[in-house]
Image (cartoon, rainbow, N blue to C red; front, side, top):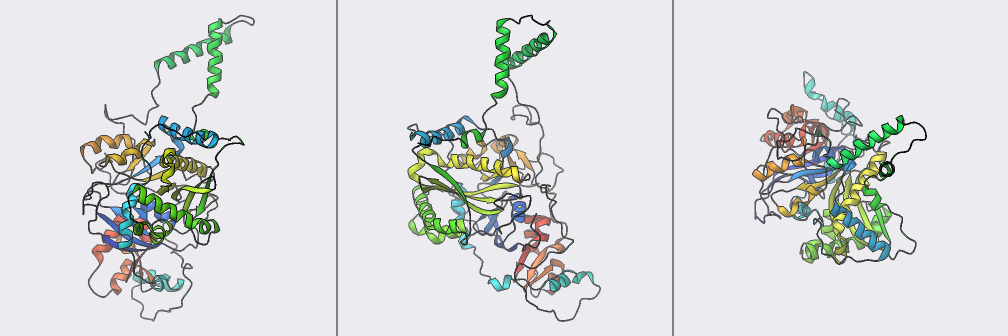
Length: 527
């Protein structure tokens, strides 16, 4: 989906990090992941990476080592177009409406799931700094197009060319990708977006391939209505239906219009002119060149520090302006606009919640080709009574549905990771219908089919087809694209040119984790 002429992603792979402290079970070195520094990244590459279990924290992109880490983290997505609003969700939305329209403050204790933030990322920001790249920008600027294309084809020639390379420098970003590269077809989700709908065994949850169950009373009522309608058609003109039957018919004709309320019915409500409060949600691109982002930066950074200290017990140095910038403002994603994409474009954004002229919450999100991906949320602890975590998640689901109208491929809401082994992180499963990503075959599986498996083992392969394999696996290591000495080349050429010990094992590991498609599109920096 990457726009024509856009710069390719450039990544620096670090391999498996040493174990670091787990924010869930507090194990000092049990949290294990593979990581890479993304100097730049296209939204399509990041979409394909999160569909293989990767996730970003600032510019650091990491993938938990699922069968070794102490608390396995499964990528979770909500099917936003089919979202089923629950009673507790309605309570939160009504509470906000009452507060804005009447000034009512709920005195009831918060019973809702604690989606105050995506807690895992509060832990992740520790290692984002530890693994920061030391490579200079000049080393990352590829050379001219004709030079690159000649190197791409070098291993296809019978003799390796001996002539000196023409090192004509060009602006970063004008490099073009080879024509034989696989490009995703617009409107066609990546191969990783398959859903397994095997019917569950008895007692293993709902069968999502069948229509939902209905009450016998409703079925009887509907049958009676159908008979009455047939009878009405057959009766002679002037004959009367019994009074009770007429009431039943009129009730049912009304119930056709009384459809269940959607999330939009609660979110987009017209308020009275004299409402005591005003809530405005602003979508701001994460860019210091954007005037709105720039003018609200200090207020936003102050709110982040207040939230981190109150909710996560950070010390002031741990949540200063530099930490805020590195963690929630630095993004590798290149902003992109596509004709069939959303009006706001793709990339990283802050969704700011302005209440009576001041920011009370900020949802950090990435807008990608097939989804809105939630990165983090921070809010003013003084407004905890409004359940801003749940409220913002519901707003983000409604926002995803809104974007879908202009961008038909964009239909999912990614909530980060689901951690079943940590009970306080199970709330994400309450946003239904949701799917979890199989850590071995990268197919999506309805969460109802995953939960019984997770009760038995914290690490699970969800795909029950024992013959199924990772369809996106690496088949040709030689086709992995490498950026070496400012020159783009396939790994097969780089391998011949490289001096020193072989790095094939690390390149093989990288390619197996990002998959064949991304490994042929992204540039792997090698010094």
